[in-house]
Amino acid sequence: MGRTSNPAGSPSRSSGGADAVQRSPSPTLRKRNAADTEPLLGKGHAELAALKAELKAVRKSTTLLRSPIRTITIFAQVLFDWAWSSISFLLSHRLVSSTLAALALASAVAVVVLGPENPLVLSARHDAWFVVWWVGLGILSSVGLGTGLHTFVLYLGPYIAMVTLAVTECDTMNVPLDGPNALVCPPVGTPKETVTFLRILLKVLPACFLWGAGTAIGELPPYFVSRAARLSGQKLEELDELEEEDAGVRTPSTIDRLKLVLFHALQKWGFWAIVVCASVPNPLFDLAGLTCGHFLIPFWTFFGATFLGKAVVKVQIQSAFVILAFDKDRLSWVISKIEQILPAIQGKLGPIFEKQRAQFHKDKSQHHANEEEGAGWVGFVWNWFLGLMLLWFVKSIVESSVQERLAERDAATIEAAAQRLQIGVTTRLQEQKQMEALAASGNGGASSSKKKKGGK
Image 1 (tube, rainbow, N blue to C red):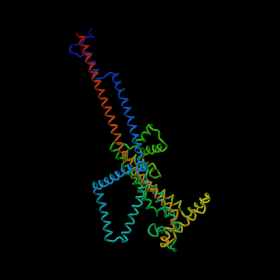
Image 2: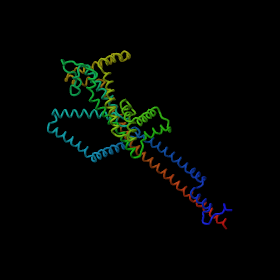
Image 3: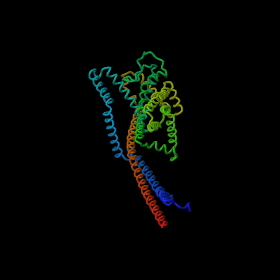
Image 4: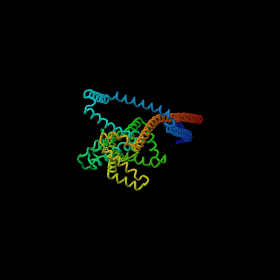
């Protein structure tokens, strides 16, 4: 009897059970609500994946050949934004704009006071153009995401080869590299010198170093783009795909496996991994900039390692190979062997080589008189090749810029769709909670009624 009776004023077990029902809905109701929510989530994720695939297909099809008007229109918008961003940067950074204005004013005053033909003005103009030319070619070689112009093959490599042939043919290092008598042997009677590999390397070092510095500068856009995306809470498509492959969501291709190796190496070794990747010909180096920007690696760490690898190590290795390959005696031996192996071209490469050697010994008047004659069909083919490469480079830059802009728009569209999905799920959960509260209050009222009836 004592165990079943309750003291006056103490809460009954029935009321406590009612409170427990109000605090915790029944497991059956929770399972039913979860079963109602999971299809909604699954359907939403499937719709997001389909939307992402559709937007990517449309983006990849936006090219100059398939959609020329739309591509050119979007690229015009990109150019306008770039111009406006540059103007805004100069207006907000007074030191930079003041320095550029001062340099321009000093150059104009020097030309007016000293005269355009003054030796100092001519020398300064030559040096400035030399720096702009080679640094600019280096930037064009690595700018963009896999769309760089191969300026080493088109410009720096032939330059090193011609310098090597000239100094080894003339047996002197005193061969001018510019001017009307560029790469023409000194007059007869000039003392001969010992031409060594190291001396040739030092002679082409300024151009090589500036070109390598340009390639390091050209790697900065992917770094800044990825860094800005990370700071704004976004993630680039390239890194998102790599993380999916790393997690086993997607099956990686051979190139993607190499990207994953590079991706992990950059995360693990940082500075020295960047140096190594920049020191060898590496078509995947754009990923290094994206990865470093995504993980907020300091700017000077990334740029310093890239500069060291490209301007100090890589370009010197490349120039060394060209110098060794285009030594006069070695090249003559290679040409003779090629003609022996390929009888169809026997007697054709040798005369071209001898004609080029003869160009090094012509004086100024002969050099200009026979300039067009010396070009021949080889020069014609080479000029066409350069033109096609430049057109392909422009096409690649336009399409990559347009698709990058479309990727930004698509990311905003996907983000809005994900927010709508989240709002829908949240609304559904709130409705479920209200239903649970109503069910709990109903159970509590029923228990109270039973208790009253039992008391009567």
